[in-house]
Length: 376
Image (cartoon, rainbow, N blue to C red; front, side):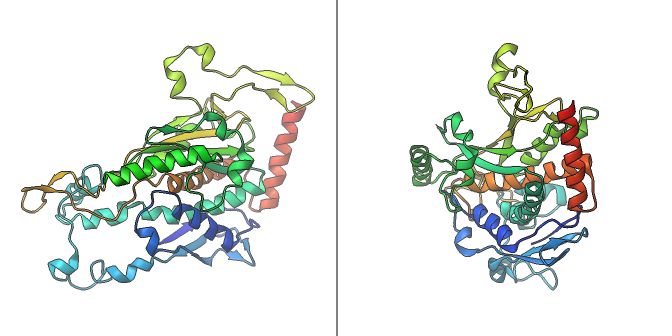
């Protein structure tokens, strides 16, 4: 997998080990399947950096699939189609996957043409790109992390998201992104129970960004609203079917007094203050200076060990869906991908606001803006 990241200013530190760490985090979590026992993701930086710093030109990253060798004949980009068995055709689409819609769209009876690209395997490349965005944001004082909010019917207490330092300190191989052992144990038990019955299970993760200054984004046009852009980024992650900014879902059934964050002012602290953050750090399509919080809701995965009924694309006869490698729940990995996608959107929005061909120039512009807020 190759990804090209364009738009980073010159001078952003790019450390291979840091990108590899993000890739390792994406591979972890209790509930992952067989593919993660095959791969050991590592990035190759092909261009766009020199001596560990971006040059201002596009950065090219490569991640090699170890499993590629096992699929060379079936996925050969040139040559003739092999015999049916060697071609590993997939003609029984899985309900809930891209198989049937993609086969109809592109006029193929072999959904293998669809499912390989539709697979969440491609998020490894997005994670690598997001690692660059996170490195850039860190230079501007912004930290992005995630936590596991729910697995099946097990829901973590809301205050687990308040201790960002504890979330950042979690080990890369944490089975769930929670700082409390009781929460982790209950979530792991929910995964094990689903695996025992040959089923998948859904969940929810939260992405947290600390350090965003107010005024990033726009209220002027619908496509520039930061919450809309973050929502689209989360929904682009495979199996994510819903997104909430802050307490957006919880407050929908209540009144306005319980939905919004009163405004205060403290001249000796940081100026305007909020006792709560129900808005998730975004109001009117712009950051308001509070911590940005967004939750993404993951449906149970569509590939099941005991497949659902389907129809063969060739014969049109009733059948059961094909079975591919899958996870019971990739909730930790989805949170890491969510971090990457949020970082890409936030980095883009910061560059729109502050510009700069070099990191030093971007920082200077940011510092001037923050100083003007203090004067205001």
